[in-house]
Amino acid sequence: MKTNLTMKQLSEKIAEKSKLGHIAYEEAGADLDFSKVKCLGEGDTKGKVEKLQALNAELKDLNEDYQEMVKLTQGKDVIAKSYQPGEKATEQKSGRKSIGELFMESKASKHKGITDRVDVDVKTLFESAAGWDPEATRIGRVSLYPARALSVLDFIPSGPTSMDTIRYMKESTFTNNAAEVAAGGTYGEAALVYTETSDEVEKVGVWLPVTDEQLEDVAGMPGFLNQRLTYMLKAKLEAQVLEGSGTTPSLWGAKNLAAVQSQAKGADPAPDAYYKAFTLVRGTGFAEPSVLFVNPNDWQETALLRTADGIYIMGNPTDPTPKVIWGVPVCVTTACTEATAVTGDFTNHSFLFTKRGVDFQVTNAHSDYFIKGKQAIRCDMRCSMVYFRDTAFCKITGV
Image (cartoon, rainbow, N blue to C red; front, side, top):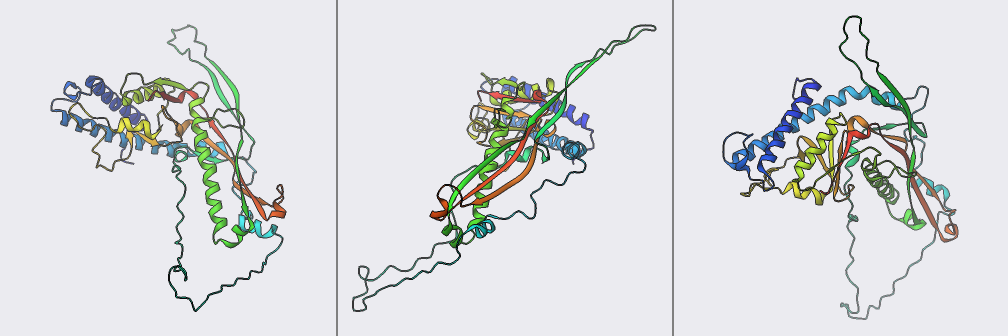
């Protein structure tokens, strides 16, 4: 942590610096003419852009300090949400068997006899037509099908649960009639209403047919299938926590929450639309944005923003700086569909509850697999994505 400021002071400083940057963009106008910018002081366009970049770097540091302070104070709450007295740990049991072990237990035979013979006429001149090609050994690398890197879940707190439904109380009414009271006067009456809210634990699953020979003959095949099938589950889970409809068996996605806020880009530059969304999260949701999820094709517009005289606003292309805007980390991922980004306080107001980890099962009892020497490998996981405060999240449309 780089500061001695309190959480409140950090929040106020973030808001102050963000407002300054927002004013700079407003003064620059739609054509980003930084010669019109007054709030950053005197100087040429390059100098003003450098000041804006320095402001963005300062916002990044402030936001990192704020998020770190949040993590330091939320540990107790996270444990309280996930811990149930007297329950056993829900992590994957050490006795759970791998694909290879399950296969070896289920297969009908262990030995197959193989005979091979090569006939060579030694009287024939050995040349390309009559001889054979040199032996070629395949290298060990497997070039995998293009798939996105997993990154969304890195920004979402998670923990185990033993329940099949996540129930919690939500304060649905908060009427604050606190006021000054004269001697002998009547106090203002407050009102608080709490509503039980629940989110179901849903299942995400996939299966793959594979022959006995593949599992038997290819070294490392069980471990390889473990890795690929687990990736498939997590990739789907990442898309669900952003895009899910919330209708069983779908998980809740931040974009589809009942009271999620919305900010249209319209004619604004993309940074302005993002800033306005952050303001909605702060001003209406009373929360602090922890991340912005955006599709690569949409982020490109922001990354390539230049002033009227050609200076890159988001930083020099050669700078290895992390993706940050207005001090908020940016997660660029295709798990977020094009044209609609989403932001919010995922750190404090969302949680991914996991009923259990990834579970594998193997059988040859499916269909005619037994008589054809095939195995069905099935894997799944059960979890619930909970958003505790809808207004702490905002989607940005038209980006």
